[in-house]
Image (cartoon, rainbow, N blue to C red):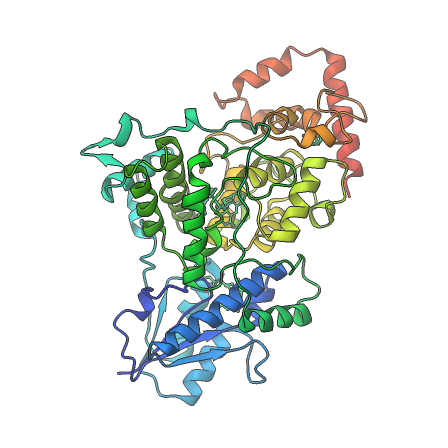
Amino acid sequence: MTALRIVLADQLSENIAVLQGIDKAKDLVLMCEVWDEARYVKHHKKKIAFLFSAMRHFALSLKEQGYQVDYIKLDDPDNSQSLKGEVARQLCSNQFDYIIATFPGEYRVLKDMQSWEADFNIPVEIREDDRFLCSPDIFISWAKGRKQLRMEYLYRDLRKKYNILMDGEKPVGGKWNYDAENRKPPKQGLNIPTPYQAPIDAITQDVIQLVEEKFSDHFGDLDPFFFAVTRQDALSVFEKFLRERLCYFGDYQDAMIQGEPWMYHSHISFYLNCGLLDPLECVKAVEKFYHQGKAPLNAVEGFIRQIIGWREYVRGIYWLKMPEYADENFFEAGHHLPDFYWTGQTKMNCIRQCVLETKENAYAHHIQRLMVLGNFALLAAIDPKYVNEWFLIVYADAYEWVELPNVSGMILFADGGYLASKPYASSGSYINKMSNYCKTCSYKISKKNGSDACPFNYLYWDFLERNRDKLQDNHRIAMMYKTYDRMSDDKKIAIRHDSHLFLKDMT
Ligand code: FAD
Ligand code: DLZ
Ligand code: SF4
């Protein structure tokens, strides 16, 4: 029996399910760079270069270990430019008894894979992706019968199941969650470590040139290219985080500083999501750091919660709710995406900084995504389909399973509260508290209305009022309606007027 084994760009793990039990002498591993995947949304140039280079390095490493690998480059003249087309080509030229794949990261790819069996008349085995701690089936049983899903409960269950930061049946330190000690505003004089710069070898150079030539119309800068593209280098990124950043991860998790895109975050989402790093190995390493007394509990617990809590939770929701989830639009938001999400050309300094850093790095940290770029999209009623497309394009860690729930669920509340208990809407005061962006902004954070007032200030109240019928019964924001209702009529008129003007002029 001979198998054709498919490895996708986000499946670059040597113990990936599809490679388990392989017969190196007979089976063929197929990996391909295809237009259909690189172009179905116009991914950031750096994201494409990162993935193609990581794929090429991974294929090489498999070959060195004696696997038979057919690696199809983008500019191969015979490349059909789709995953299905490349599978078809293999089936025409070689004799296979079955196809094996690992469960993919996107619903549309799963549907494609599920069509192969009938279309090619060959058995197709799609194996569970066991790099995740919670399979879609386990998530479904966990979710069944619960009126409300909340990340915190899944997180606790997974901590117990995998014995992470546990002291017998109890959480280490006595509490499950140390967020109350986290989230400090940035202070002067923080000595933020430099980010990792991976070596650029000939493979990466070739890929950068290819992307420059073939994807010149895509968003984003190729230079400087800093991504790790091998497991070894991805491990170095993670080790640098452990040594230099982890201690302050919790404290400054939500802080934003102009010109400091990396802060104390780990910058490993790219590698976790494409397979160069394994979530459980990272979690265990961080836990060990705590037990060795090298990092405080608030940082360690906070970090672990992001990976075994949020990361698993959003994936569970994605597979539970697709395909309907992609069309959710609770607030019936219908604005187009303003041009400044691409150019950064806006007087709003916070947005400008976050967009320009995204353009340069294909990265922004969580609070920039959530409380600046996301919060604005929510307040300005931008249609979820445009917001989702933008987030999927611009970040090198974006695949639909993780991008869509974060955008439609977490920032836009487009699912009506399935993922989050309340919208993360906020006026400019949050950004002012957690960053220094407002200090050099053309708008005045202290002003609530008028042409020089911070737009977040009036858009926030306008958002609440516009969506009163949908939100006023949510006990977590009921207080805000009481505050609004106490405002004078003149104030309410000014809020409506400023918001109307701003949204009308938004191009
Ligand atoms: P750190 O802050 O160091 O966190 C450690 C790890 O925790 C991350 O690497 C990531 O794997 C995980 N994590 C943290 N928060 C989340 C979360 N909300 N969902 C899933 N995993 C999480 N993350 C992606 O990986 N891909 C995306 O496309 C993506 N889109 C997002 C869109 C929006 C609107 C928002 C608000 C968040 C999004 N996130 C996404 C989550 C989060 O912003 C990124 O995982 C994080 O910024 C990556 O940087 P880091 O590795 O330095 O993370
Ligand atoms: C994102 C992406 C890009 C840019 N290119 C490819 C590619 O050429 N070949 C490939 O196998 N996958 C690519 N991907 C990832 C896919 O679009 C998709 O997100 C994953 O295959 C889902 O598991
Ligand atoms: Fe952003 Fe408003 Fe602050 Fe300007 S004043 S940086 S728009 S929050």
